[in-house]
Amino acid sequence: MGPNTAAVFAQIFNVNTNRLLDPGPMAKGVSDRDKKVQMLKQLLLSAGVPNTQVLIWVVAMVMLETGYLTNTGSQVDNNLSGITFDPKYFPASMKGSARPKSEGGNYVRFDSLEQWASTYVKYLTKKAAPIQATSIEDFVRRLKANKYMRAPESIYLNTLKGVVERIKIDTRVSTIEQQEAAEQSPTNPINWWRNLALWQKGGVVLVGIIVVKKLLDK
Image (cartoon, rainbow, N blue to C red):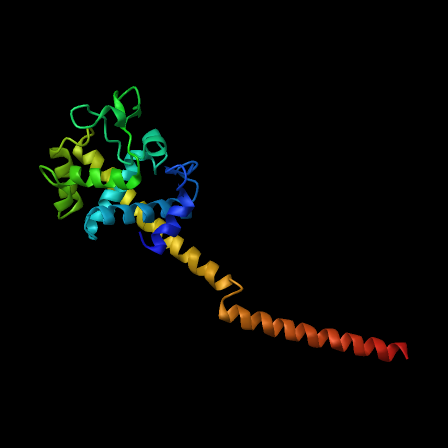
C-alpha cells in the first residue's frame, strides 16, 4: 500500500478495529463519496483488477450494491460486495451478520478489506469472467450469466450506468475542490507572497499613522 493509498484509508478506515469508519448517509458529500471510490480502486487494483474501464464498472457495482459502503455487510463484515455465506465454500468462523430478510442468509465475514478484495476478484474471473468484459453492456451480460444479480439485465445496466456517471462527476468536482483548497492554502507560494505584500503594506500604513499622531501631539 503506497503513501497516497494509506492517506485515503486513514480518512475512512479504522486500522485499530480493522473496520470502515461510519460514513454517514450516502449523500454526505462529494468528497466523502470520492474518498471511498479512490480507496476501492486501490484495493481492487492491488487484488488484480486491470486498470481499464472494467475497474470503474466494478467500483460502480460495489457502490450500487452497498449504498456507497453504508450497508451492514460493509460496516460489520468487511464485505463490500454482499458475498453470501455458504458453508460449502467458507468455514463457520466466516459466517457474518444476517442479510436483509427479503434476501435471506448471512454475509461472509472477512478479516480485512484485502481478504475481501482477493476473494471478490475470484468471483469476477470465474465462468463468464466479467473482469474480461469489453463494454459495460458486456460486463452486465457476464454478471447475469454468472447469476450475480436478480434484477432484469436492462434495469441493472441503466442503474449501473447512472452510478458510473455519478462517480465521474464526483471525481471531477472533488478534484476542483482540492485545487481550490490548495490555491487558498497559506503554504501556496502565491498566497505567501500576497500575504507578505499585504503585511508590508499594513506595516507601512501603521508606521504612517504613528508618525502623523506624533506630529499632531507636538
